[in-house]
Length: 136
Image (cartoon, rainbow, N blue to C red; front, side, top):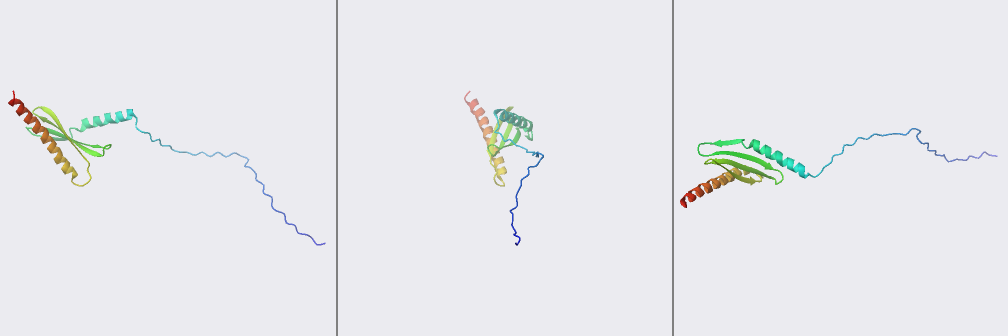
């Protein structure tokens, strides 16, 4: 008899790993929270303190008028604020102008606008004192 060749299919056996494996993964989580009332108040206090410190940054003085110009950037409103604090006849007065710098030369226009605001305050105070004396 001739020998018969039989083919057997291979048997696949899955053997579990005898030792458990532990993997450690480090992740950094960044929380982005909305500002709270306290943090906004703290921010405003810090901004006010900085503003008080730099109000003496630009000083213009002569015998008739003394003036300090304060420049600040308001990030929430996306604008730059110019504030002139000056003494006129011993009284402290202020004038403000806000603008959004978009092109070169906007700063020059803003300083001219601040000058005009200061002139309005000076003129109104001088005219008010002149007219006040007229009706006394």
